[in-house]
Image (cartoon, rainbow, N blue to C red):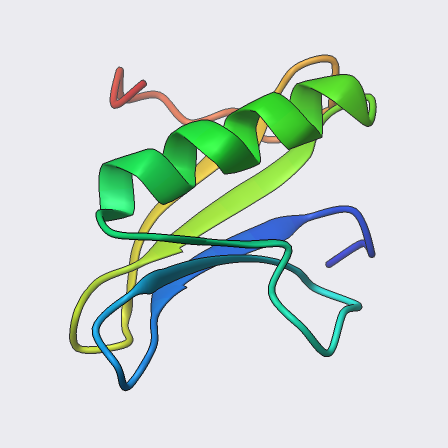
Length: 82
């Protein structure tokens, strides 16, 4: 279930990457690269008490999901992506 503090990284039509909360209309921050946007989102999630970070690729499809501690993931992944 998606919570308000969860964040999504996606590419905008102008080529920049946005870091956006799920319940927000505007992006929290804009970045030149996807990696910069992910780093900013991770820092914000840690400060807010954890949550889910969803990263979308250039095609708009979900590329990666990660639970940022101290968030609670009831079904943690078995792979070692992060």
